[in-house]
Image (cartoon, rainbow, N blue to C red):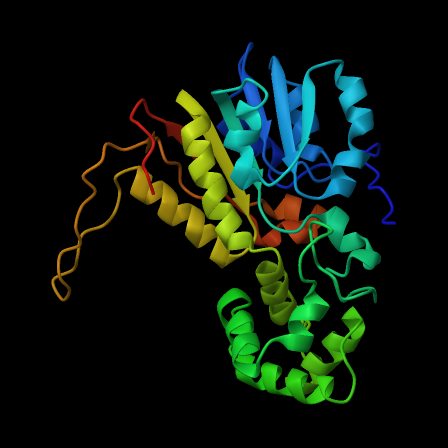
Length: 320
């Protein structure tokens, strides 16, 4: 049984003040924290004059760990166990059709990284799991059964590992002698394949990222979540999304540019790109915001964070 996260201690989420500014919460608002985690954004939102907060998490331990905050909120907080890609349906089941503000904090949480038994990190050895939910194939299942080509694709496309084929080949060779069960076991094989530790970044970082994203279908979930937010936000509703690597940020940036009617045309060297024929569903698309030097000094995990935000128009949500 996984230990419950401790959300009683103060937890300041990345870019908290900037996210709150983008959400522009007002008295009577209904807000959504799409990624509850350790409850940092939810606490910050509850401190504002909103009427109700709905918070989602696909991780059952996060939901269990947040029950104390539910009691503390005295009826203003509803925690929902489920994927944020399904929040339109899950809110509809609770009689909620539209909301005023939605915040996303994409990717693995500090709470999950710090629990060795979850298998997300190689900093502390643990079972090779990585599942945000206690169901479906684990990371161990993937590295022990996927083909060399499939593994290389996972590391290259989701981990942006330039030497993905070398890593995949080393894993297939190693698993023939002993199946992978532990995070440190896998990290050691990856490090050896890439020539050992050099510099401040562990050689296993990219491959672990790619494996985690694949196991949890994170990019597909992000796309589903953004489309759900588009449908849920009322005209004038505010969206704020914090991502932590280029793959996530690219999905968010592309979504907002398309929905905002900001798709660029072709260059003189390329055919003209078709411009969107649908009315923009988002406006006031802000420039990307990144943490200050002071914040990254306090929290090194914040160094790769990017915040993007926008305001919902009155146009219908797009179909795709």
